[in-house]
Image (cartoon, rainbow over all chains, first blue to last red; front, side):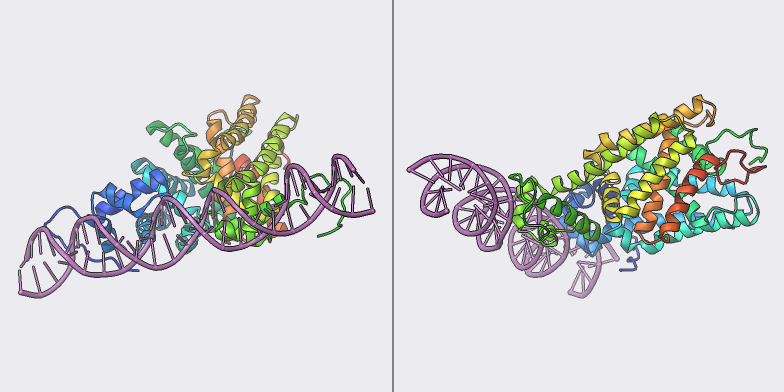
Length: 214
Length: 214
DNA sequence: CGAGATAGATTGACTGGTCAGTCAATGCCA
DNA sequence: TGGCATTGACTGACCAGTCAATCTATCTCG
């Protein structure tokens, strides 16, 4: 629960707390939270075992910190996007882009967040259920709005649509994480396009191509 | 137990093995695989600790068995559906229905399969990657086929579409598992419809309503 | 029919190893 | 010199898996 100590600009070596967090990402991604030992994190970070406990109250707290750090950035992004006066498609594209870019930028961190938190119904998922729900609700809100404007079909429950949208994205990341889908700059861009296109326009070939632009 | 004498009392005992597996589903769903003890399974099943090891080589093997039992049924269903000469939408609907009905029939088992295997990139997911991939590939095949027939847009990579489709379904189950979405007969039926409608037809309101019957 | 034999089913105490978390000692900078 | 940073050996708890003993249902054969 520590509000996080203010990182005093100790002239010394780089912020050890940060070093530990970054090392933890690598270790958690490589071995999984349960399968790794706190000593693995310390070794990876090049610090003594005890230092991990100087900065964090427990092994759990390390993961909690990693998750919240990133998830809050995403929530802020979604809120920001939501507030803009742009077409729904663009909003959803922005969200999909953010998540996919997050993976592109730091696949290990996203792997950890998804595998150990977002989908861990019995451990951290339960702990952070509030934050997770928040994201779904924000997306659901975007869908609701689009329905009110007549851009999206009214008969689809927004919460369900939000889950389907988010689930599709997470599953793409999962495909990359599991090595089931090819990765690469081009693939990531295609994926952004695909997920928005599929969810918004559907897989079916229109009788005529979409007259609706954007 | 029920009847004392059974028609063909094979040297095998009543189904203690089954009793253990069913108990394990409940325990894994309630506490999670890592957080539960083998003794919890034995207690839940009402048998001695050692009996679990009489029927299974390890704690892992219990989960492996549960996963494979169910996953193979699903793979068989998908193959069967794939072989039928029906519209793609019906094929996808059949698959979505099967998965959702599986959850409706035994939510604990589906929770365990999804949370502990299908999404566990560092443990069981890796072990069963072959089986998991098989499902995605079969679905991808259905998409490819539909594209060849001109029913689905050709520009969407089938494997990506398959992941998005499957991911959407799994996320709905996740929503139920986490208690984020309302459950109930009606909800399950709506979900089946929604996921197929969304993925096939998209969220956008068509210029004209779907000529394709649902 | 029944004593003894056989084999699988069942029991639960016990062991060996693992690890998260503690803490007293030491290092380092202002 | 005071105080935070850092170290790493140590401990207490926990638990998967083992195993020798016991139980139970058949089967064998006199």
